[in-house]
Length: 531
Image 1: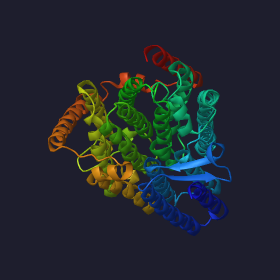
Image 2: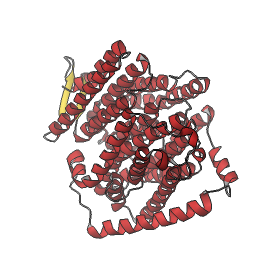
Image 3: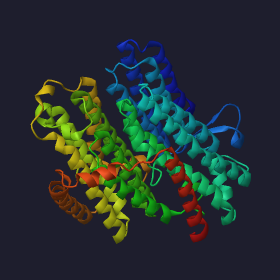
Image 4: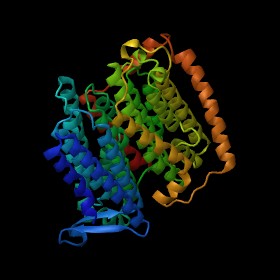
């Protein structure tokens, strides 16, 4: 039955390609996507009774293609179905061609295939086709800037995936299989020295796809493209990168005898710190959100590497929490850019006076991203930090302070005198519905966070009253410090030159290739010599 979960979005894609010129047919496709989300929820219910396994075709065992759904995979299939449903609703009133709708839903099928596949080579094929589809969507506008950045994205991913291809070749040479579960069983009995090279090759490719330091530069580059479709930029940050983190989790399990948790704890923390520094320096609304995504990716990687069940579960839940509020923020940014005709946050003022609906949505999304009580980010960040030692916990508080600064910078657009030029311009109904649906999920994800972690990932966790009160006090103090820093350091032109230099930091294609090679060399050295 799992085959249909991969094929159903492709069927919707073909339907839209044939009939998408009529808005009524788009609505039908949205209804079909909603039904598909219902079936994704049904799959999650099934996996709570045991893993669901499907062999594609007549081949069985290691010779065939096997799709495997456990509760974690089913949770991300459901997340994928929900976010693509939201993207379809948001894009309902946009004048997009048949090609756009075709590629969007093919992209969904490919991501679901990645979540369900347990075969190294199948993942390679699915990931590469997804990269091509995303590149075409990024270049959809056909402007020179979009085509150039889209090609850089495509070529950089081509370089990164070569490490993956060599890695799976090495794994096959060592184990004689490409099935992850079978490979893990064999790898457990192999000499550690023989695993160093394939692990470094594979994890370099995955780290590039996940956009960690120093391999992160492609993500803000493509998310900040001037005319990239809003839904594409949102799904890139909220979902596409999560597929790489999902593979990171799988590969760490496969290479358990050699997987380096300390290395990725450091990588995650450094990624998060640099991400918030880059984010607070931005004046472009989409670049601010893009670098903020980099920071949250780093936080997730660090949480997964703490070696604590609570932090691990919190990181899994943060992948979902971040997907919901970050997609909401990107869609809000798209609405604001359409209304104001600019991406410069300094020129966008008085949102709350001009359009209270969007203003409230911004507040709700910001409460989610900063980890405010009763919102999803609060639950996920609490558990990530629950297993951290004093030093790591302090760094995570500092990272959340940076996130608050980013949120304050974003929220500054709510206030001030609205430009009379834009009075009367508001978000269309479908965009507002999509955004508020996500904001509602952010609230529900905080209200029922502990239960959802248990339901989605089968972890029985509970917040301690003392720890929760301590976290609220820390968050309140962070907000006070953040407001003071914004008023006396970030606002005005006092540090304009300094922030301008930070904004200018960027890697060209050659620099991206060098960073991939450098990451591979460091991983090889750390795993090989420091163990």
